[in-house]
Each structure stands twice: as C-alpha cells, then as structure tokens.
Length: 547
Image (cartoon, rainbow, N blue to C red; front, top):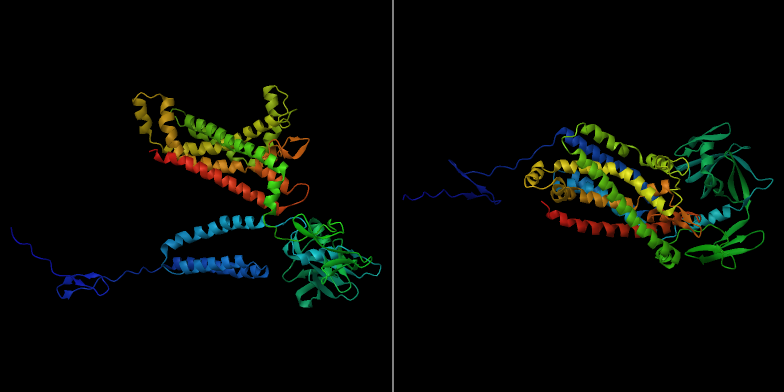
C-alpha cells in the first residue's frame, strides 16, 4: 500500500487564525468583511435616535420640576441604552431585546410598582396635595369680599389640564390697566411683551392655555376654590370673567402649626383622624375637610382585613367571580367550538358566508351590545320575555340576573372562541382523522380522542388569558346590572358584583374617591389573578405531551 504523502505544514497566524500555503509561501487569512450601512438605514437610525433625544429634552425638565427622580433616572438610562445599542453595528441581540424590555418595564412593571406605592398612601379626595397646598386652600376658602375690595378683569389660564389645573389668574386692573399674574405662590406683574390685552382683558399669554367661559364653568369648583395669596388677603374668582381681592378670616401660624381665626381668636392644631392628619377641633373631629397626601404604610390593607362586612362580602363575591369567569369562558368556548367544528365539514356550502355572519357580534362594540341586551331582559317589553311568553323580572332577581349576565357574556365571547377554534381545527392534519375513521372510530370518538386534545394544545393559553380577562370584566357587570340587585340591608355589595365592581363601589362610592384604598384592593386582585393564572398554566403543561 503506497505511503500517504503528508500535507504541507500550515502556518499559524499571529492572531490565532490558520493560514494556508501558496506558491510563494504562507498566505494571510482573509480579512474580515465589514458591511457598510445603506443611506436609508443610517437615516432611520438618526431619526429614531433623534426622536429619543427629543423625548428626553421634553420630559426631563417636567420630571425635574415635579421632583420625580426615579422617573428621570429611568428615562435617562433607557435613552442611554437605546443610544448605545442602536448607534453601532454591534450588540445585535440587544437590538431585539432592548425595546421589548423597555416596554415591559414602562407598561407592566412600573404601573405595578406605582400601584403598590399608591396603596401605602391616603391619596384621595381632599388628600391629593402637600400640606402647604392644603393650608393655602383652607385659608383661601375664608376669603370675604368687602365693599371696598378691588376688582379685576379675569382670564383663567393653565399650563396643564383645563379641568384640574394647575390654574393661573391673569388680572387687569380696571383703573390703571396694570396686568398681573397670580398663582398659588402669589401675585406678580407681567411684562407687556408677554401678554396681549384687548378690551381690558388678557386674550393671549405666552406659554399658557387660556380657558373659555365654557371651560371655566366645566372646571367648576376647581376654579372657584382657587385663590391667589396677597399681602392684604387673597384674590378669588367671581364668575368666569371677574375676580376680587378680599380679606381672609383665617391665617396660618407656622411656628405653632395652627390655623387661627382672626375674628374670634379660635385656633385648630393638627391631629390624627383615621389614617390621616387634619386640623382638628377640641374633640378631635376634623375642623376642615381638607387634608394632605401622607404615607400610611399598611393601613389600607389592615382596613380591609379588620372590616368584618368587607371580609364577608369579599368571600361571597370572590366565589361568584370565579364562577362567572369559569362559566363565561366555558360557555363561550363550547358554543364557539361547536360552531367551528360544524363549519369545518367540507360538505357544507357557503362556509365563508356563515363564518362572516357568526363573527358579526365580535365586530359590534361591547358597550352597545351590552346595552341592547339590557333592553332584551326588560320585564315589560323585553325581547326574551316576549319570545318565551314569560313575565320574569330578570334584572331584579339575584339568580335570574346572574343567568342574564352569563347569556350576555356568552354572546359577546363566542365569536372570539369561534375564530381561534376555526384556526386551530384547520391546522390539524386531516390524515389523523382519516386514519381514525379507517380504524373504525366514530366521528365523536375521533373528535374527542384526537381532534380535541390537539386543539387544546393551541387554545389552552388563550383560554387562560380569557379567564383572567373575565375575572376583571367590569363592563358587562357595570352596564347590565350595575352589580345589583342589592339587599336592603347591604347596599354596598350586590348579587352580581364581581371583585372589580365591588372594589370600584368601595373606593369611589358615597365617601368620595379613595385612590389609596382602591390601589390596595387592586394589589390584592392582582395577586389573586396571578395565582389563578399560574395554577392554570401549570395545569395546562400536561398538554405539552400531546403530539
């Protein structure tokens, strides 16, 4: 056997790459190829990075003014990461992962953390601002107009919301024509080049949105209660176009931390009422409705656990919420699957037409559909009673109201289930069903043993998501029954209330908006929903073995 000729030795490149040999000796390894970016790619990158820079320039001063340092740090870090990743051709995986990560943090993680933080405060009506703002509101509400009080032509302006402010008063003195600008910090003169005055009234101001008389009326109490402190008292609106400077009956003694009535000498100090500080009477009751934003720790959660009525109602409503979500998903899935399986038969003519008709309820806005169904269940002239020849008061009976809700929600949900089941059925190979038929399996047996398990592999995650949606489906409850009917001895918890509608009534009922308390209940709902969803996803892992 002839000896094999050994291959010529290969030279090793200094950087570790192996070089071949040529007629003139060792050859260098090929140089790396650098792909040049096209002009359109560069232009897109410049535009995107420019947009990011513009957002930073726009939002950063706002966050600094509001002293939101965490938000500012997140904005700068996110913008910096985008600049680093997209300004070069490197970090290819980051180009795909970074946008999703930022959206996850901004749209999911941050709202959750903000809700948890809000649940540890007393934020709500009369408790939204700082203590200084509360004192200014209390003192300003005592402004009295005297016979010789100066009056001004008023223009209400804002650099924020036209309904909630913060507001600024532009005032024109009728005698001197002098223009002043006032806000919660006080009154100051305005240079003539910053405003435009016509017919004795400011009609344009740089950097401000001027409210029309209709918008002033819409703002209502927010403008009426707003005052501009002055050396002699405070300026307050009188109608939509006039303001007056009156004297204040109350003043704040900062050294003693008390509000004093200058007419009677009576004073009020700070005391604890419930979970918030107020200026209180001698007996400890609040002297004024105004308080201020304060941290309360776990007080909102303790309030839920310590209230026997809330705990009892919560347990009953939780059970109905589970039943409502499970039955809504089960019924809509059963109807949608039955219709999808029926129309999956190739022997049926006009499949596209039938499918288009069945999807129509999905195209109707849910709000309109629910309101229409509420009229169907009317006792006297409702379509349901007319067709069945009944005189049932569907929405006044606890059990009938629940049936009405489930029927309505099934009608709203079955088109979605029909669509996903149709797609899943069409993805199952026809050979599998044909093989089962040839083996002697009946149609129902083949469907139950082959088609349904394969279909559930695709639709099970969507069923879990649908359950989570219906667990907090406020629309159908709020629009159809408003949580009722209610028992005479318990007007706060209705027979058809689910947890989210019950939470809404507790937080925004007769005692005004209690955002901190609502946030605490929302955190508990989030935990319940997350636990149930995790259990459901774990239960659906068994479907992964289906092939």
